[in-house]
Image 1 (cartoon, rainbow, N blue to C red):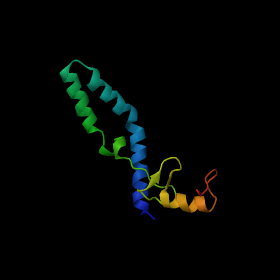
Image 2: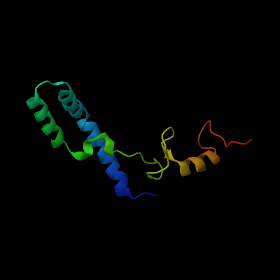
Image 3: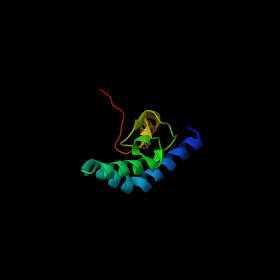
Image 4: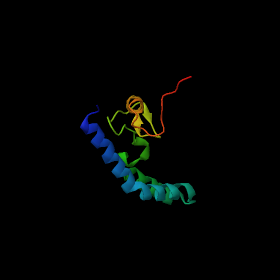
Amino acid sequence: MAKESMKAREVKRAKLVARYAEKRAALKKVIATTEDPVEAYEAARKLQAIPKNANPIRLHNRCKVTGRPKGYIRQFGISRIQFREMASAGLIPGVKKASW
């Protein structure tokens, strides 16, 4: 089980990313498309002023059940360990153990 503080930190980062998404996109567009180097420089300075945790790269997927950061299965939103346990218990619809 992951520490509650780590789970809370990820939630906080997700909120920051959502809050600054439009502003980041607008500034990045200005930097990429403008011909004026002064305008691009000012946009880059403003982009640097945005908090580090507002960058979507800093987000990390975590298991919804345990908070485990590794072995995450995107389709189900849980870790491989929880997936195996839940699938064996029949808690995930449409998933059954392979046999051949």
